[in-house]
Image 1: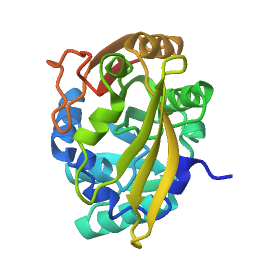
Image 2: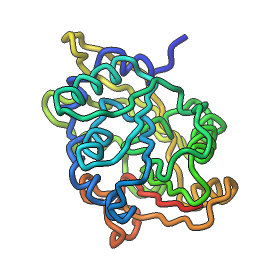
Image 3: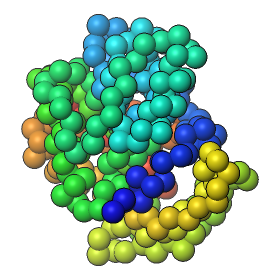
Length: 253
């Protein structure tokens, strides 16, 4: 039986590239470059790379990038875009819970919910963090974004989705946030690349900063910093608040 996140990305690559939440690529890559000191000798792993927007942009800037995703449709579009752009990115199809890499990368990125927080159980989400950690070298760095569990304690997720809805983009309805599990259950309504209207029942896990810190400490990260995550404008100056829908996590082994 297919999970909702598998069904969602079966034929939703071109439309996905028009979604408002994927428009911050340039600024996000500027931040990533600054975090690794613009060292182009470093190997980067992009987990849940989708249609390859960060992989391709970093590759254009001279980095060696491997992009992995579960969706064949997203990867096919990523390869197309890389060819159009004239860059070579090593795109591979893998499940983020069981990546085949061992101590190979200097940096792992996992942005815009690249798999993490979409899984059915906390254990599965933790497998993604474990897998990413294993892929990193001894002094490796891990940069990812995830849903901020402080936000739904102070705000309605339903109202947030409604206020950010844009014509032609996917929409979320029937949101209900469960305080016991920190999961938001909702129905996503979207149109796939063939023009078919679809509805899927989804649920996503929100994390509070102390949970993320503990999970990463368990995996051996020595330095863990968490900031507010602003689309296309990641910054260490943005202290995480209850107003941030997402958080930006920077961890070093």
